[in-house]
Image (tube, rainbow, N blue to C red; front, top):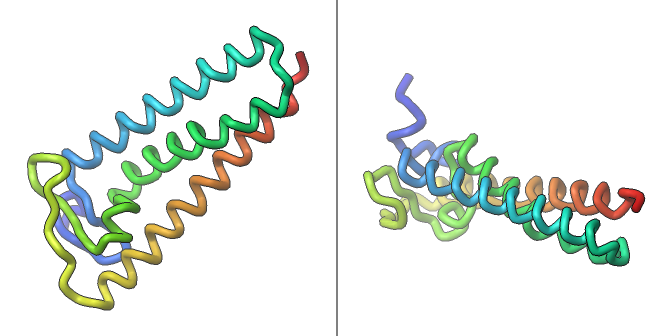
Length: 130
């Protein structure tokens, strides 16, 4: 079996090592931002409704981690491109329509699951007692 890290597999894998590292950095940065934001909101005893804004960094963190784990970039999947090169950001086009359809399906799944994770984190944060 060919490694998923260096070959396009429609709906399964569309990024290589450089892109995976970038997704992990995004995940960690977003998670750290979310924790700092939550601590700040709690420290200043803000109205719990403000904690619902944690949906955004939590969703972004989940997106970064999920894309790294799945070796799949949701944005690339929606755009019909891929990258297995040594540099992040440079892409090639997915030529076959069926492959692009499979990639879009996986991209939407990642986005949906990430938003769900963010909503769970935000709801949990909302109910933290002061």
